[in-house]
Image (tube, rainbow, N blue to C red; front, side, top):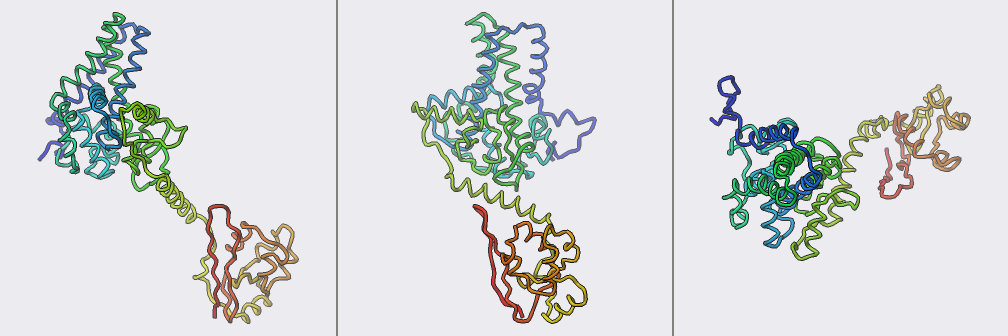
Amino acid sequence: MHISEQPVTFSNWYRHIDWVNVVFVAVIPFFGLIAALSTPLVWKTGIWALVYYFLTGLGITAGYHRLWSHTSYVAALPLQLVLALLGGGAIQGSIRWWSRNHRAHHRYTDTPKDPYSVQKGILYSHMGWMVLKQDPKSIGRVDISDLNNDPIVMFQHRHFVSVALSMAFLFPCLVSGLFWGDYRGGLIYAGILRLFVVQQATFCVNSLAHWLGDQPFDDRNSPRDHVLTALVTLGEGYHNFHHEFPADYRNAIEWHQYDPTKWCIWMWKQVGLAWDLKTCRRSVIEKGRVQQMQKMLDRKRKTLDWGRPIEDLPLVEWEEFTRRAGEGEKLVAVGGVIHDVTEFIKDHPGGKSLIAGAVGKDATGMFNGGIYMHSNAAHNLLGTMRVGVLRGGVEVESWKRRPVKGEVISSTLSYVG
């Protein structure tokens, strides 16, 4: 039995911990923070740390994620090499390991085979899956034959420790030291603390992006869109769109949405470093949006009182209808449906006498324009007063109002009796 399947006890808790990952995502950042308290921040180093955060973040978003995990575009060999090195500087595992997990995440979203399923808790999906050992056999199977045949991917995978340590700590330290003499600051700020921030930002895609925001394209699974997540992840926060259209090189499709990764890929295309940028047809995207809107409208519709369904109403003969009206019931027929207006007569804003005069009669023409063309709200209100359906050769036509733009309203014509 794998350790992850065993209960945590006082005697085996340490065996549940992935100590290598803990060192890089927690221990080193902790000591880096302590060292920063006694290390002055040189403004050049601060700018370099910010720039290197963006560059190593691109190594993950444009490289690990959109290039290798989803093959949403093709990159020239020099660009592949740079992205592989920068991604290594984020110390999130090799391209092969990262992409294998991410493909499983997409294929098995929110299931036990999802390596960082938010169903296990937001803390688990954020960091828990990294610091706690997982049974490799529990992760869903995916095809990574293309990665196994990619020389850049396999070179980085075989030499990942050297690539990661060099790009995460040595390179930013040397840049700060050789150009403006701040070796210590380069290591602490552009190296260790920058690493912590870029890791936490990426982890937010696994946690916040499945918990915070809207679901404009589909709500069957947990991915969501939110600008806050996009801001800290270089555009990866439009996660609901991404899970619906994972092969699209864009995460944000609107001009005002923040997705610098998309802009960089587009710019690389202009200079010949990238090509075959995959996009989903706008019509397909809008179909998904409209379907989700309809689903939300249907749910809202079910919470509203539309009156008793016509198919559940009792059939009433015309003679019975007039008899009951003559005996004092305030019944009015509109469109072949009998309505009890007893409680509404006194509340009508200007037609009390007209309603009283329509009791026991067919008021269809009066209601639908003979005296006044009633509003949509009036029709909805009338629907809550339904008590029966006339039978006896009476023509019944469901009311039809003029639809607003984009709306479809059906009308039926039938004879009951």
